[in-house]
Image (cartoon, rainbow, N blue to C red; front, side, top):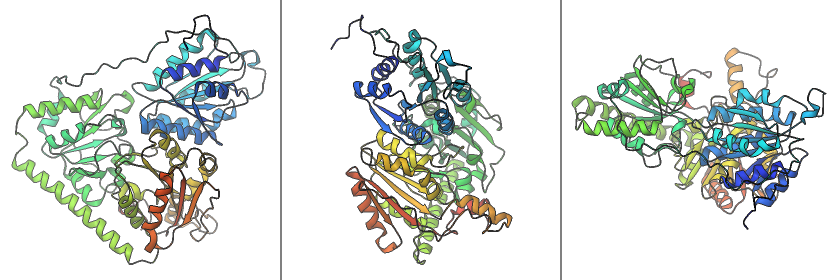
Length: 566
């Protein structure tokens, strides 16, 4: 039906939802407040609401959706404590660069300063956590400021935005505008050659380069441009934790994660390189620190966000799209001919191949050692998950002591990877997996999490299971928080007085007719149990596999870096 110019939206939420629909939004996550007119508007427009019981989890789900899809995610909240409760999720979305639009209610203007119900200066609360925070002051501003919010969220650089609709603006009948502004068109310069500069000169002069791929390359490397650049350069490929999934992890130059999560053979490459090319990463602490410090070499950084260019390292810094830089640099290196085909380049290629071979041998040794033990070890669990996964598989992870095995052990994320940022909020991965599945319904989605994180998201997992299932939860059970317990042991604190874990405790129970729940203790049927769980998830069910783990089952890179007791 053609909408006539004289028509009016029923209320402000109807206008906001119409803008969202016209811009391709089809899903909303959240826990609205008392003003359920938003739900009515969503229903009328055919948009689905994924219901939540905790505002933090709603933000985590929206962030997971945005990171996996690269599209805008929407999170609906109430006001006052609903907004402060969601602040942790806003922080995570900001650090991850996730395009999330937060729609919140707000106390009416006429009650400002009176101590009204749930009155709070929510813009001041959220402003440090988002790219743009705004309270709509008049009905005439609802539509244009919603368009502005979408534009700011999608960037570049992308990130969360906050838009508040006060209670006295909400019921306004707003005229329908048939000619809404469309999202800005990006100027694509895929074939533009790069002018000579310090960055290209450093790349040309390097003989032992390393390429480090950050989270900003997500959705920017579908055609393998980064891999072609590494091949032309003759460089090993590493990623930060958030950069996983941006490159082909089965590529012969891929050597795993950098910094804290790097395997010992890979750290040899870092200790002898002469250049680091950092693509769309922030060079965060865990990416640059670990068992082997970086040598004092030139670091070429390229990032579209000025805040992502570190001032801690010597070398050229390029402000721009890392994809365009890679394409231009590859073109320039190709024009140089066979300059890289030298004895030094061949020696560096041999070292890369040797490191990969040693990592494969270490993996086999780890599995052989695990096979000799009676309990299921995490390396065996990850190997079984990897062996039973399809190519279109997404791994969603937490950042606890033992679930960090998935950062270090070769589990291939063929369909993508979603991890917490450096903020590592508890429960992010467990809740984000629901948003990831919504974004990629045709992919297998596995959440690899600890029991502490699982408990933080359990209520929302139960609520979403009937209508929004399809996620396999693999839960490592040590009865608490392994990282804190490791640091307790480091300081020699009493385990009974400071009981951060209880390895003998029964795994948390997850009941419900829509949930397949199993406790895995017998390694003889490990793969069989995982296959059965995957089959159920393929039919839309939710599967929860609880795996008790031993306190000493810690990833080797973390032991090597001496961040946990030996």
